[in-house]
Amino acid sequence: MRKFVVAIVCLVLVLLVIDRAGEFIAEREIGTRVQSAYSLSVRPHVTVRGFPFLTQVASGHYQEIDVSISQATADGIQVHDIDARFTGVHASLSLLLGQDSGSVTADHATGTALIPFSQVQQRLPKGIKIGPDGSGLRVAGTTAYGSIRGTARLGVTRSGGITVTPEHLLVAGISAGSLASHFTFTIPVGVLPLHLTVTGVHVTSGGLVLAATGRNVEFASG
Image (cartoon, rainbow, N blue to C red; front, side):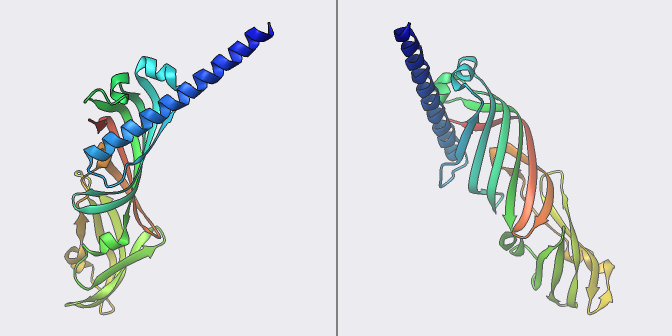
């Protein structure tokens, strides 16, 4: 009886080691494919959620896979700290072993990303600077119209761009809402890496944080 118990324990330990080793191999392979697909300088961090891993491998379906990219480019915009969560993920065993040139797909994805203020500043009209003002933006500077100051609201275009529209604008100390259109601009983010589409934006001390989603996405390809 004792030998039987020892054998069972040893078998469980072996399965656990195989399970963890398989998860590590899969995470590395997915990370490599994401790096190649989006020409990233560093392989992103990938975490396969759910336990045990081997039962997910057998079905080819995974509960959740998280991907974190430290920096990437979207339409010429440097985007930082891209964190995505994919659910309803589909991937064959041969793909995870690097033997298949297909893609890892997901039914649904959500994510966030950061556009630093330095990137926003490069796209402002000359002489204008912005900074955080609570949940909004502060606008200030000197232009051909004179010194200006005010606040700005953020929005998202249908194509995924970020709009910055001044409001409560003062030019040379005088309210000048009619000039707001001269200082309105769009940051053309488009589709983020991992096929995420921008759906929202808010201000933090470090920049603009984007919210993004995706459906039926191919986020890692060979």
